[in-house]
Structures are given as C-alpha cells and as structure tokens.
Image (tube, rainbow, N blue to C red; front, side, top):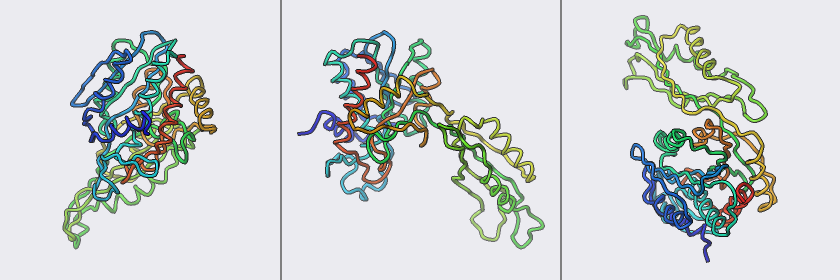
Length: 376
C-alpha cells in the first residue's frame, strides 16, 4: 500500500509541468492546505504560477519553498517508461521531476499535514512558497513573491528548500549556501578577409587564443572554510561565416564564473577588462549577474535539520555550498536563515530521473521533525 507521500508524488509527476507551466500542481496542493486552515494567495506574474500559503501570524515564520516546474524530458523514447507515467520500479518512482523537485514538495506537504493535524503546532507561523519558474529564467517566480512579501513587511525567519541535495544517500549533505553566478558574453572584433590575404585582415580567433588561455588559468581565490574556490568555465565559442576561405570579423565567447565571497564582481570585471587591454583586443562584453553568494551560518535551522536527519537515518549530515544556483538566492538577502535539503540528486535532469519511495517517506518524517523542533 502506497504512503500518502508517494501517492501525492505520483499525482504531481503525472502533471506535465514543463517550465513555466504548473499544470494544476499548485491547485492540487492548495486544496490539501486549505483543509488545514492555510490562507492561500495566488501570486501570478508574467505567465508564471506562484502560491503563497500561510498558517498563523506570529513570529517566527518557518517556510518550506519549492518549485512545481520541471525541465523538458529530452527524447521520450529513450526513457524506460513514459516520462510522466510515474511508474514505480524497484521502490523508485520514475518520471521527470520525481527528484527535482516534486519528491521534496510531496514530502513537505505531507509533513505539514501530519504536523498540523496532530496539534503539534504551538508557536510561530508556517508557510509554503511554490513557483513554476525555477527551472526557467526565474524572474517571475520566487523573486516576484519575495518582493511582494517585503513590500508588506512579511519577514521569513527560517526557510527550508526541498532541492535534491543528497549525494550518495539521503541525509549526507545539506546546502547552507551557494556561490554567486556571473555570466558574460564577450565579442572580440577583428577584420574580415580572404584566408589567402591575411595581411589584409585581422583574425579575431588568433587574437582570442592566447587571451582565452590566460583567462582560464587565472586563480581568483582559494575559497574559504565554507566555499570552494571561484571557477571560470567557457561554455560556448562561435566564429566563422560558414565558408572555409573567409577570416571572420569577430568571435563570440560565452563564459560563467561561480564565485565565492572571497572575490567580488567588481574585481572579476576589472581583471577581465584589464586582460583584454593587455592583449590589445577590441571587445564588447555583456554581463549577467544572476546570483550573489549567500550563506546561513550553523545555528538554529541547521542544528534542527541535522538533529532530524540523525534521528531518522543515523547520518551526521555535512554542510556545504556546492552545486548550481537555487531560489535561495532570492530569500537569503531578506535576512532569513536558508538551507536546502532533499533527495539524492544523481538522476536529476537525466533520462529515467527517479527517486526512492523509501527515501521520500523518510524525508517527510525529517521535515516534520524540523517543524516540531522550531514551531512545536
């Protein structure tokens, strides 16, 4: 017999909520929360579905945050079963979004249901923040909701995001921060010409090679006790006219830095612009500052989660700031303690994405334990 958490997960996975579509996921959850007495607010923005559901008005405010949108499936014929069928094989629900992050969302909802109906909610307030714009541009999702909350001075004290943080086994990793993300689109200009007459042209590819070699060998910092060193990765290079006998007029280079608090955006930009000048390059560059680094120092929220994980699994979870960006980047600047904890992330965004039914049930109990410690 399936648990409430697994049953809810299957219902959510069957909804083809490819970003930014929600496909009724939040409506399904809203009906369950309404029965518990939550005040529901739909906060649509730019074609994105957002839900803010709150129970109580007192401080502290504990928030579960998550997203109901998923990435595209890729070739559906490559899956062992249809990507939205939510079949169970060997104790695993297989489907797009099962781990990222409908498994975490299902565990949150059932944890809240047990916590509230048991009468354990004695202190503070409890809320859920759900969006269908996390896997996409993320401009009309959590960021928009947080802006509205700030405008009416609604302060989040604790926030647990159900992103898949576990690596080898459920409970081994808690994300208590994230690096910043700074993207760049750099165009190096040259002079187009015939390859047989290079003296009449200026090959931007040739100019770019020594510059790019030096760029990728910069040591930005050494990180710190919580953050790995800043890294730069080139993600795309485009040049050429399509003809083999033409020197192109320019080359476009896309790159991204995941940076620690030991390096600033000002330093990154000035260093790269200085390097362009040293190589006498004619350039234009567009920057994309998509995320600033944040961290929640060990304390009330991390202690409660580590205790809950240890009680349910016997594992002492480690704290780290690895991985990509998350919606925590929008919540942490408000002053909230923000951490991420969820299922094993080994198959997220892959063909045959899956999550363990046993893990999801355990995760729901862990979430409930955190609520009992903070609001009980």
